[in-house]
Image 1: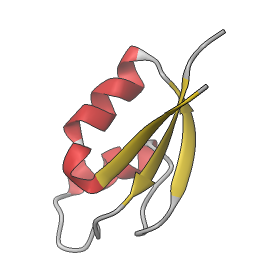
Image 2: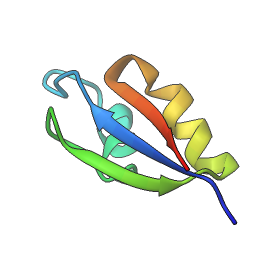
Image 3: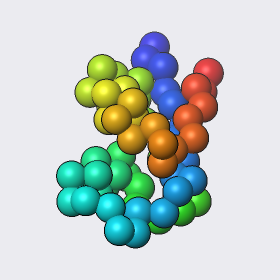
Length: 61
């Protein structure tokens, strides 16, 4: 069974560069307070690590 993570955006995406906005959209986010449940795969974890200053992450069982 694959692990899943809950990702919540806690910081605004206003005045951010285009690459950061693309990463947020790839994670299913874009507004403060929006949440997304994602599979814990290496590409997703790489995006989460890259955008960690915008996100709150919780592992789901």
